[in-house]
Image (cartoon, rainbow, N blue to C red; front, side):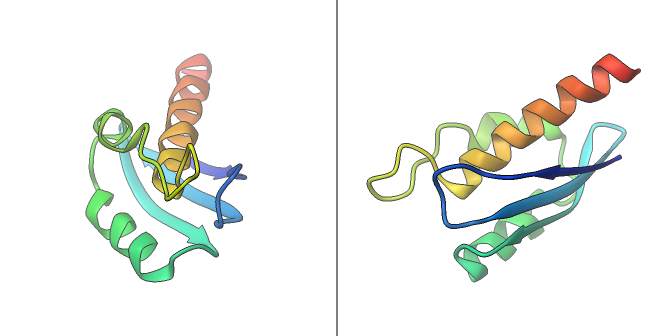
Length: 87
């Protein structure tokens, strides 16, 4: 299922990803630190979404209390909750 998320407090303006059988696929960020975000997307491809949340949640960026990776963990958590309600 395709998911869209608008991150808060970071440089990235949009996050999209699919969750299929609990695994993350096709993650993409719009804006932000291009190389780092592309690397994150490659690293999490096919990973269990719950495991990605555990790894990335709470990650900060400089003086900010969040990061694009942390925002992705929030998006994944929301998507997993949404999917469990529709199942």
